[in-house]
Length: 635
Image 1 (tube, one colour):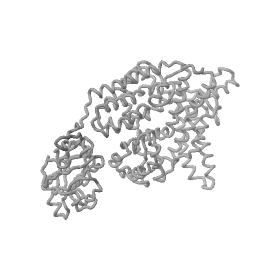
Image 2 (tube, rainbow, N blue to C red):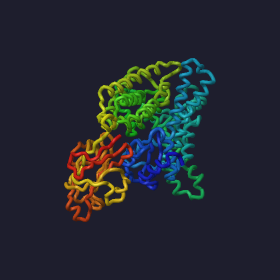
Image 3 (cartoon, rainbow, N blue to C red):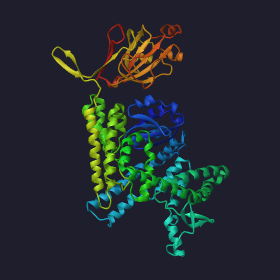
């Protein structure tokens, strides 16, 4: 068991238990669950769990954002939920767009780290040539270039494996299909050379299919030779087709010989169809798509950079950036360079600079303490902790980071910066822009970083104000003072006050859910005790959870066992996730009808995150009216 075993148990429990998990993968910061029934997951509990940044739902995935240590948490979740790290994915539900995003992310996520690392090796190699530590003809260059190139050259092999898991094909069969696509003699150039060797140099292709030259035949069918090394899309489509062949073959072939006979059938059907039909069609469509992107960027590179830079972090939030990454890989494979992702390069630095500016202005000590680790992560290109934990909840700083990223994207694209490597994230990515000893692109990337970071920082520093309350002074004696943060909770319910220990419910009385008081209502209304957000509103309306703008979490439980009334005698005036103002009417309830139905109307008012405060002070009054101070929380 790892050190995140307890967190893993809580996560598994609150996604609906291990029986509700179809599959689990992870990326740099997120656990990506495929759940049988997402309604069984406890979103609010997970979002407020220590060790969890937030929860997102996108592309048919239930995403639990953890942070940089997600691989360790993933390992413990795998063990706790009795999953296999090599378990097959299940097909996603939802519309076609969600399925496409889910397929692409499922295929690329498993080797994203290896791909970034390989790109970094190529970038460092280019940097060393620029610094004249060795030449591009030396053995040093050849070895490092081979290490960096391998993942890209053999992309079909890697994708053959990951796509096979996604489409529930035997992974080893998928790996062999990918390897077949990289086999030297079936590449377009090899077929052309072999034909010219017998027909004469420069001889035209004897056949044309889809306006593409076919230099050979298979069973009399013209065979269009394409170059599949480093390709992305053809292998995914061939694997998807092969998975259907495997499904049919398993129904026909006796189980005693399925081990070798099913792969035999898959190879003999899927690969010829792939080479003769799927491959050429995908190659043609890929060329059309690439031409479209080139045309868009040729029309206005600067406009493209502004749009991609501005929206990049939004795409990341919803997982939609996976729709762009394959396009960059395809362009890199075809042209040896790409501009598809250049406009997004500065986004992480704009986000990081915004967090730095917030650090100097935040009054909330807990939130301020989150800034340094988020800044460090952001420098290295991992911005989810900054986005979900700091800037997005405050809204305006997140928008400022988008503006900074757009400015950086505009500069890079307007100045023709090109990426020659699909390399590292964050600061490690600057070497992506070096080519053959020319580091001008890298120098421009530093300028882009400065522009994006400066705009994000200055906008936040001068135009954002932290709404948290200032520290207030509390007198402790006639000649001494101490400064403390305090938050006042006005009473949400009018009535008489009793200690929490007097509650008829043992869980409340023992303080298992937090500290607070019991109110015996004299008026059947619940109003907002502070400015905040409705975190939880039970369907039965008998209980409501709030979180103040300063972070205090409050549970208001109207009556005991009133959940059994199933909402009868209760009327709510807000919805979950609504922002409310102090004194706003939240719920109205019929006290007499509830008591006649045999239920107590005593109402526990609980600070559920009391452990985050130095002390919780309850009002000493016996009766309390709306607007009066009920609880004082000291930080």
